[in-house]
Every structure is written in structure tokens, then in C-alpha cells.
Image 1 (spheres, rainbow, N blue to C red):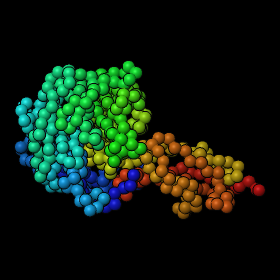
Image 2 (image 1 turned 45 degrees about the vertical axis):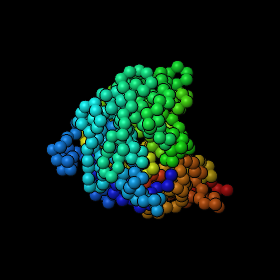
Image 3 (image 1 turned 180 degrees about the vertical axis):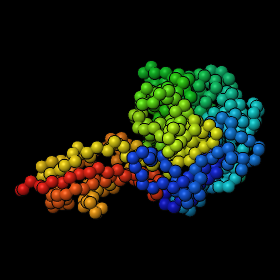
Image 4 (image 1 turned 90 degrees about the vertical axis):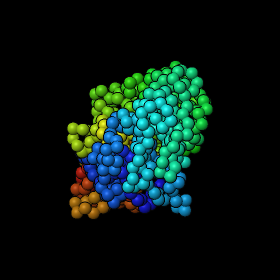
Length: 461
């Protein structure tokens, strides 16, 4: 996916949470780089919204009280059609569930709220899920009122359009719906938690169908998290089309096609952490799945087959601290992630980590030995591997800016240089691997790792 050319600060103070970033550059070892803060010039060094920020923008009119779902979107009305570059900020909508309201940014410097507690127009009760599209349609899973609410964002304001559903278990009825997602078609998908199902509807509230599990007998058990993509979405690779659900009190992830085929599962027991709980979900451009985990203060990442990739955030170290993450949204085009926390929110870009770098040998005799360099990537990246001498000069490039997949990758080298195949001169070297994300973060960030290598005299021909 092509990175954006020139980027402005976007979604700055956005919504109760968003805010943005401090710069990052090359890193290694104990510094995680799967998620990175944007550079200073992108957001003036802000990357975390707190109660103080909310007070500065909205005074005493509201407070953070059980932040929940998020939605980030580039609105057509704010987009410059004369350019394909990223020319304006995102609009981010965040549910402040305990206050029964939505907090959203109308510009880089203005934040507004919508809603109050109740069951009438413009009112919510414990809303948990929210989704939005580029045309300004906003859908809310109004959990306590057992309905889906449709709003329209226009000229900096949200207005009520309609509500769908009532309490029950039949068509156009819900029981504590907890999440809502929007497909590229405009159809909406609802995690109907109390009814153990996912419901598909049109944007006007017409019932389409329900999914209670896969075609082979797997059934949903109180789904609480939901994310999905349709194949016509312009920002999903290889026209992937699937739904992913977290259920069983957040202990399981299930990925299915929209026609009911099981595509993958994962459980909390698959992770090297105690008491894992998968709550809110998001999907990136390549189809990897992100899940919030409030009890552990983490974001867990899975590849498109729901194989565990990594976890980021650790409240004990402060290196990337997350405070009971709740909601999550991902703008897939440029790899921007917003995370709602217990009392605020954070903004990140998708980067990549090089983990578990291993070389099959630290001594190589050209013409006699082969070297295998194994490493694990936490995101699709362009990789370069270089042989560097003791003076820091690059003697040979083994791999030159080649795209590599999430997961385990292996590079091989026989100790010979260039097209002529001359053996590398004997000496002490370093093999240096550089991984650059394919998202916009790749313009500002890369990760590196290295391992020593001694090249011995080549076998005579």
C-alpha cells in the first residue's frame, strides 16, 4: 500500500481522545515499535488526551466517564477532490458511555458533544459501539435502549435521523447490542450480545439476515466485540471479506466469512499472559486483527489467520503505557489507530517490530557454508539486510527493500558478493536488518536489528 506523500496534523485534539503524538525514529531491543507515536510536526507533540485536555476544551460541561467505542473517518465534505494526498484531518467520534454522549472533533482546534441520558431522540443509555462512514453517517449501538441509532454529521453538528429496533429476539429486535460496524456497501453489522448473534441490516434499518455462528456448528456466545470488512472496501488488501467477533466474556476470537464459513479462532489461552480479555476489535489494511485487553493494559495483535503476533502496552514499564484500553478504531488507509482508555485516549501509527533475530551461524566460509537469518515481523514491512564492516561501511546488500510478511521470515546467503560471485573478504562484520512499515509511518520510522558475523577465508577453487 502506498504511503501518504505529505501529511498534516490530523485529528489532533480529536475527540475525547484522540490526540496525537511524539516523534519516533529507528529503535530496537526493549523499545516496542509495533505501534509508534507520530512525529512531532504531525501533531505538535500531543499523543494522549487526558481529563485536563477535555476540561480545557469543554470546561465543566462533561467529564470522562466510561469511554467506550470509537470511529475515525475522513469525511468527504472535508476532503479536497483535486488531490489524492492526505489533505485534511480525520474526524473521530468517541462514546463517553457513562455520560450517554458522543465526543467528536469538528476541526483541529474544536471539540463538541452530542447526546444525553434517556430513551428519546438525541438520547442514549450506556452506548458501547459506534461506526461512521465518509458521507457523515454515524451509527450507535445504544446498548441500554436495545436499539441502533442513526445520526448524520453535517456542518460540525450531529443530528438524529432514525432509530432501529426494540428489545426482543426477533427481526428488528435486539438484546443489549454492544457493537456496530459499517461495510463498504453501507450495510451495518451489529453484535447482538444478549441474542448470541450478529445481525446484518441496511443503513435504513431493513433487516437482511442474522449469523449465529459458522456452518459447521460453532455458535456465538454473547458476542461483545465486532469488526468486519467487505471485499469492495478500497482499503483492504486482496479483497478480503470477513467478520471477526469476540465472545465468551472476551475469552475467544472467531473469524468467519459473511456466508458462514469458519476462517479461524483464537482463545485467551493462546497468549502468554494471564486473564486475557478480548473486547473491542479493529482490522488493518492487511487483514490483521487488533483486540483491546483492559485487565492487562494491552493491545493484542493477530495475523489474518488469527495466529497470535504480539502484544503491546505494559502498564508496569511505562514504555508504552495503556490505561485499561476500551475502544479502538483504525483508519486503514494510512495505518492510524485511536484507543480509548479508562480516562482518556491515545493516538498511534502502525509500525513494525523485528523480533527474535537468529542466525544459523556466526562464522561463515564462502563457498562452503550457507547462512540462514531468521526473524519475526509484527507487521508487513520492506526489509533490507546489509553486511557492514567494522568501519560502518556496507560491503554487500543481501536483501534490498523487499516486502516481507507478518510472522517468521528467513533470508539466506552463501557468502558471495554481487553477480560475479566473488567470496566476501575475511573479517569481522555485522549483519544489519532494517524493516520499514508500508504505512505512512514508514516515511518517519524504521526498526533495526543486528547480529555479528565472522567471514573466514574462502575455500580455494
